[in-house]
Image (tube, rainbow over all chains, first blue to last red):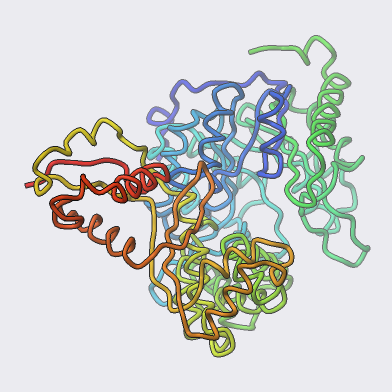
Length: 303
Length: 249
């Protein structure tokens, strides 16, 4: 069931060339001491689910001056189980507190019943791209959008396991979800590259072109950039967000920008955190990449 | 395997309930989730970790994760049952006070994330002649409890990088040797959770206030003439323990 009418409401919007970074607790002090020259900050929603406390107060204070993008890691939109009410209640309270420019989560599962009891897997667990999975993801995304009364966006994830059967490739699966739910998309460049590398894709450029070309560009609400710690040839590459965006990452970003045009862009860095200054340096690189691809005029575009 | 079986089996594998991976490379997820579980408990139970050391704590955390598993989407909620679970763990034979120390850590975390009430100064105006018809209001966010062990001193000592060099450590050691415990009051100073030793008399008073007994019942009819009560009340208001007064009956 489409619920565009039910969910699309007027939300604060970012300019298409907006650049932001992920805000983690280690950098709270930096942000408080100097208002960042950033278009937005992204936080992990669940870290602010508490009734009150320093994290919640701080986020509310920051949100008064800097747009916030709420990025969830635990909704488990691809779960066969419905996203629990308790989770939705906390998310809605947070949305009301910070009036975010975007609410998003990942296309993965996390909830499942074992012996009749509901458990949470604690990670972004991959789903097969089958018709059955599609229906459950659509149901959950519809449910969240209706509960929040607004559109959410879903992100492509890294998958370290392969499935025997699938009815769709990932891009077609995402497009089908967008068509059925009117949700937005987050295009995570690093996840795309990690999957390509682990899947031994021989030509990354072709792979990216085909993937991006299959998506509804108007649905892409944010691009994510991150780094992965390099590993040996035989080892699995893990999306650890523990280092700067690689040269190949910047090139792929520019390739995607060329194809889809300007989109708000986020630098994610979650482990082995750099100084706040270094993180802002990554945001500057993203701006420079936008200028190279889109030209100076476009990079100052305000929508 | 259908979708339902796949998802349930995957979680079972993550929790260590089965050693059969759902697909090749599933261990990547298990390592990742276990690391997150250990990190979540480390953040929630810093004194327990300092007491037993990182290696033993990791083992304890993994035992807990595999047995209790994760039931909420918020890692901040993970570990709420850790203090009572520890009692039945073999480590409690060696460190019998660990459960109470965990309880103190847990209360501090809860106080820091709770809706801590502000003091309503004007409400104290209801305290008039008839002390039997008014009661004090306890902050719903705070916690207090009795322990058979010197939990506050242990907590205080392990805030230091070198706990054994602290006076609190020496005090805790003496008290454990003598089989003496402490009463803990956990409150918030600004955003930070604090633990403080309180005498049994104060703990009884706070229990009575929590049970909404009148000021006359808890403190006596002539309490307003007693300067020690005034000082006690001022201290409790300053800490946000008592947040107001109200008429009852």
